[in-house]
Amino acid sequence: MGLLNYMTSFIPRLAELAKPIREVFQNKRKIDDEIVLKNFKIIQQIITQDPYLKMIEPRKPIKIQTDASEKATGAVLLQQDNKGIWIPRGYYSYTFTPTEQKWNSTVQKEAKAIANAIKHFQKDLPIGIGQIIIETDSNTLVNMLKQSKQHQDQEVAMAQYRIGKIIGEINHIRREENILADSLSKNNNEKQKYSEIDRLLVGILDNEQYKIVNK
Image (cartoon, rainbow, N blue to C red; front, side, top):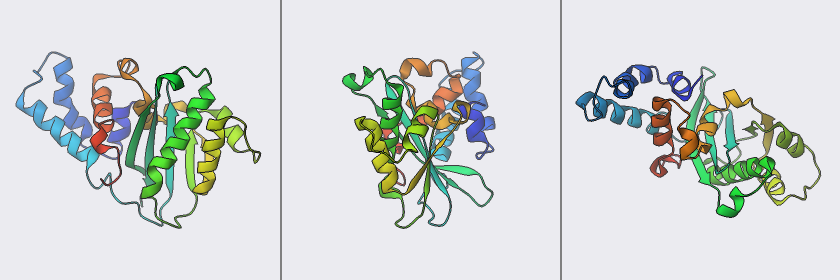
């Protein structure tokens, strides 16, 4: 399931709205066609405005999904609605410094993704909200963070510290289910592997203007 299908699960009209844009890449329409420009704007508004990005509700479950690629990290803050659907409440991405990009350890990068995401979203979490689930597709890191001992690796130790600070629970998520965070963690070259519509959505989500919850 691609990013478009994921977003369509809680934005029913998304596939319909994206059809004229898809036709641009099929050489059936021009990029400056009125309906293409109009639908792009509507998609942008749907994804980035209420009710999808709004204040966290104190008594509903929350989780943060994170991912790291070679050059960047991505994270999404989600909250479960009354129908049991996990709705995005905020997005975040971070580009590794040249030094960080040289890290050989995937675990270090995944740990950095968790620590950065928690730090970024923490200000938007209500006081006393209860346990928050943190999900990463690095099973190795999950096993490390579930241990009570203090880790020597600075990035893993920081991730462990920030999880403890928000009373978080670390869980593993399959890569194919970690769609939003994975998409946000891709650098420009890696994004070329996605469908044209998926790349359009990533571009919207990755826009600095919309990364902060309820800004």
